[in-house]
Amino acid sequence: MAPNNTPSPADRQTWNPERYARNAGFVAELGEPVLDLLAPVSGEKILDLGCGDGVLTEKIAAAGADVTGVDASPQQVAAVRAKGLQARVINGQELDFEAAFEAVFSNAALHWMTNPDAVLAGVFRALKPGGRFVGEMGGEGNVQAIARALADGLDQRGLDAADVNPWYFPGPQEYREKLEKAGFRVRSIDLIPRPTPLPGDIEGWLETFAESFLKRVADDQKDSYIADVRDALAPLLCDPEGNWTADYVRLRFAADKPEAI
Ligand code: BEZ
Image (cartoon, rainbow, N blue to C red; front, top):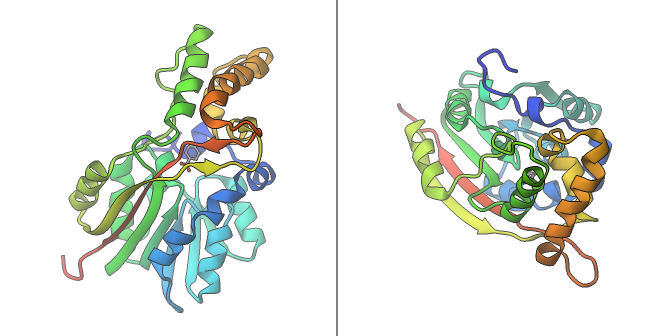
């Protein structure tokens, strides 16, 4: 647990870089539109918040920017450093930068940080006046069927599903208000349904991303729990050829810190 009692994403989910690369390579591949929205400029100092395995951090660096990745997962930060990039282990809800960056970028990470006001206050502080915050995260309705099936599977075993959901998926109005309350001017914010083909079976997704649900179940029950969740989801998310598609919905935004506050 983090010192101020804000759970770190790393308290609820651990990352295995090899498993992540196998089951979640699409996360960075589908992050291209957010990179386009960021439009990194050579020489800019940019913070990649929740940098994961650093695939997009590397692309920002390739544009000539001086990029620093931060992530709550020591394993992911080690993988980013192994690519020769700068990265630090930091809980995104406890950013400690002061007017240090021209831009803060975040892809598929903010929904793991369940104290969004703390995140936004830290991002605002980290930006120089006139700096920009560009991001994409899961939005309202994201992985709704998957989360429902995971919770139902716990209920069926008499296990409490109340506080295991580790994700924050806001709608555009809610997040706009939070951005504005933190001091940002919102340039754009859109909710984008994006059904996402998975590279393999839904089991790989569950094992990679749903650890806080799986942890509730005794070791000798895990296989049957995963099988039940899979069975519940197959009619909704699997086609007759066996291809799985996750019910993703993205919230994509760009916001600016005013020049003068
Ligand atoms: C997402 O990128 O939307 C996501 C990934 C893992 C778990 C939940 C949501």
